Length: 106
Image (cartoon, rainbow, N blue to C red; front, side):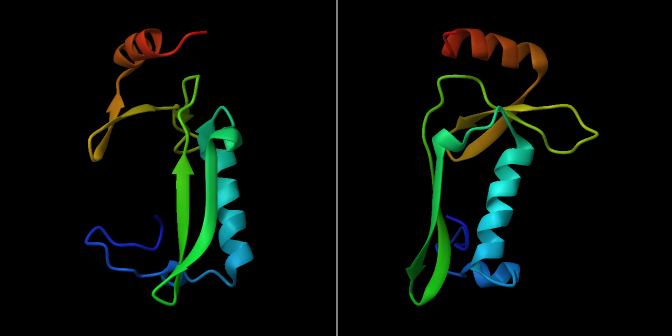
């Protein structure tokens, strides 16, 4: 949920100061296409919903059948993360390869 604090306080996407909701949604789309490899639109659903009179972005990520990498910056290498409980952990290349071989069938 974007616009909700870790302590569950509803802040709303207004905190991000986008000109309007369409600009926010375009930013979300651009982040997904620019930062996640391969393109994973089929696995990510997001929509704006209202809670306590504030707009938040509800994001649902479905399980992928292939490995998905993050491209943090054009000048930095791609990185691979795994989710472990409430946190995400970056795996070094060798560990990422092992994890992918064990968890994804190609």
